[in-house]
Length: 215
Image (cartoon, rainbow, N blue to C red; front, side, top):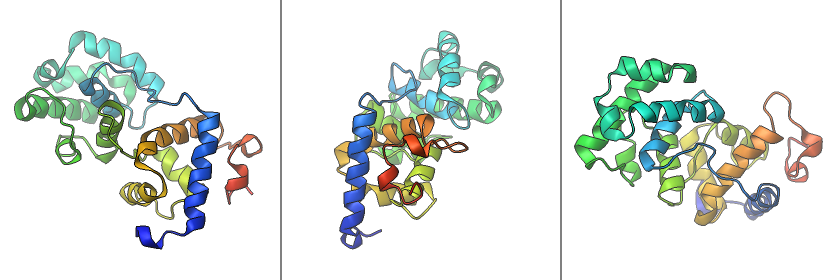
C-alpha cells in the first residue's frame, strides 16, 4: 500500500483504534519474561504455537542449565529439546535455539544483533522474532505480526492482506513509528481478552463502533 494512496479515512480509523486501545490497555507490554536480548530471542522462538504463560514456565529451568548464548551454543539439540518439550515443536525449536545462539557467539561476539537484516540471518529467526527483539529490547520502531494482529487488523479493515510482511508494511504508514511497538502489544492483549478468535465478545469491545465486522 503506497503511502500517497492511503485514504484519509483509513488513517483516522487507525488513530482512533490506537487511542481506544491505549485507554483500555494502558499497561500493555511484552508478556514474555526476559532479562536480556538473548533471553527474549529464545523466549520468542519458543512462543511459536505456544502460550506465553507456558514459555514463562519453561524459561527459568532452561536458563538455569544454559544461562547465556555461549552455553546454549554448546548444548546438544537433544538436551535442549527435552528441556523445551512442553512448548511443542521442541525438536525444531531446539535446533533454532542452538543455531541462533551459535551464530550470535561466532559471528556477533556473543551480542544479539540490533539490525533486522542480521537478525533474520540467524537460524530459526524470522521477521516476527526479529521485530520483537528490535522493538521490545532495543527500543526501535518495529511491528510484530502474530495471529492476533493478522485476524484483528483484518476485522478492523485496516489491512486487506494476510501475509505477515505485507501487513507489517501496510500498517507502518497508518501510525507514527513511536506507536508501532505498543500498538502491537495492545492488539495482542485485546485479542486475548475480548476479540477472542472462537468466541469474540463484540458487545464488550471498545472498538465495536470502529469495526466493520462488529457492526
